Image (cartoon, rainbow over all chains, first blue to last red):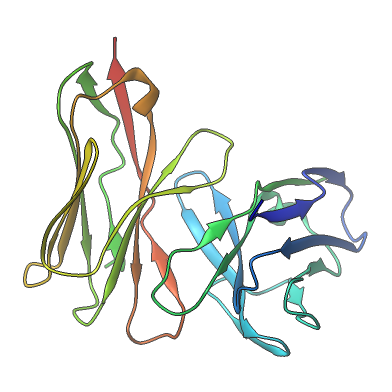
Length: 112
Length: 112
């Protein structure tokens, strides 16, 4: 089944404790992206990647890191999480420019 | 001015009625337009995409695009309670490769 997977689905952590949210897609898509969704603010792009080893900042990159060492994986790293990073996070992939994006199931992160 | 604007709603319609959801965008050169449906706490799923001016129909859904007016809409005929969700408009901007800009969504409520 073609899909985007994310892990973990739910995470409660404390301020300053490094964490990684994994994202993997099995559709051989070149493009992958991370979004956060907050009430009233919609989906905001954090980082995106157009291919292996090619990443760029989205609209809200502060406090996040990403890497794209393999085509299928695009992990999101929070080196020192803070409470304002409490949010619902979605990973997405797309075959290329102008095409639809396929979303993962989401990761609900709470930083205390 | 937001790049993609939607009325947050809620838009309330009776079962069987036509629901009309609207979206305006700022980038005149935008080429690709998408409508996603999102149930509470779930990931967005694609309903329709449209690239050319005019109407595109798929079952009970019709997307309408007017590039001159920078306006895209989604009509849902014979609305069902299961259509109750938030509908996100997304626009592929010409000035950023692979960047999809989302509106903050319109909440639709279909009353039985």
